[in-house]
Length: 79
Image (cartoon, rainbow, N blue to C red):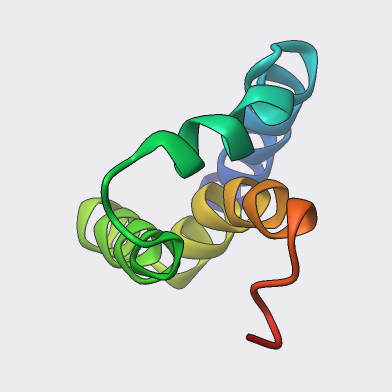
């Protein structure tokens, strides 16, 4: 039970850090400047976060806020 409480607290701190920084606003511009397709970021970021954490909660809590910010500029969800 204590592990889950610590994990939830860590996710909330990560969310607040992302929201308080200017990263979320500048992330779409940064992703467009990369020489790789944006779709590959949608594949690689969850893969790497899953490999590093080893938990599905880690995949969702690390990659979903970043991918959501990338997908809001243009609609990558429907092609």
